Amino acid sequence: MTALLEAVGVTKTFGGGLFQPAPTMALDDFSFKIESDSPAITAVVGESGSGKTTLARILLGETPPTAGSVYYLGKDLTKLSRSERRAFRRDVQVIFQDPYEVYNPFYTADHVLTMPARKFGLAKSKAETEEAIREALRAVGLRPEETLGRYPHQLSGGQRQRLMVARALLIRPRLLIADEPVSMVDASLRVTILDNLKSLTQDFGVSILYITHDLVTAYQISDNVIVLFRGSIAEAGQAGPVVQQPEHPYTRLLMQSIPLPDPDLSWPREQQPSEIGKQATGFQGCKFARRCPNAMDICLGRHPALFQTSQDRVAACYLYESSPALVGQSIDTVFASSKLRPGTDDS
Image (cartoon, rainbow, N blue to C red; front, side, top):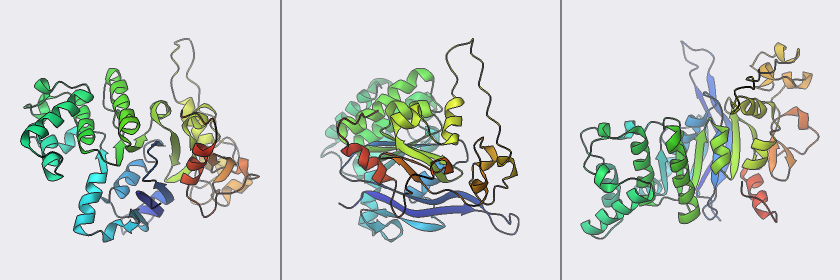
């Protein structure tokens, strides 16, 4: 079956002009697809500058890739007809980190709900539209009487973010790209919003690409996790094993950066790179070698392939060189294999 959205060999570089001779690689040969018939939540995790938001913008067609292509139902995004692009805009929705930026301050909050309802013909009458909007608001924990008619600046950050989740619930897209949707929300509201996102997948069959720097929330709601470092996949697999037993040194570093809820425990220090790792220049070899405590001579020569350490795990690290390399396949094949295993736990 044709994938809903597929990235093939997508690369994005910035700079490289007169004032910046060395280009910055934001995304490096990234391939991944989201099936149209298997709704799931896939988290893309990494520190700032790892390429997460660049990936989101490329998948949305907002930023053109330097190389590679993105396909919607088998057709290149850049070659969609007007009707196909309209269908794409309904099927693929987005929630950004700062919801305030998507609001027009001259319109009330109602506008972000009534506009797509009218544009996509979601209801047959004005009364049906109003009722559908009220139901969507209640579903995300908002009271219609306290939300509708108010301007964006009159709503809290959590209310604005939940309003965007309500918009997605109203439109019922096939894919929702959520870029750091809870990073600017109080901790007390994060659980509510994350539960709202999970219900979109479980109750309405919406696939979600959840972009975050937080492995904890990724573990809580995701089926699969992709760990990005400097635009390349460091590790990928089922959320449970990746978070509980990370294989790549970078994933382990991310886990060590999570504070433990015990004031008597000291914050763990980042492990120092090996003597060989200190020799890495960053221009060739493994991208993580300069920070890696396990760096070896081979790490200085070329960036490692994705080695399939188990049926549902891959890691780009020479520690697993004895495992078969994932060549000519997208990492979604690893995710698919985990669904086929009997007794697989949807962590």
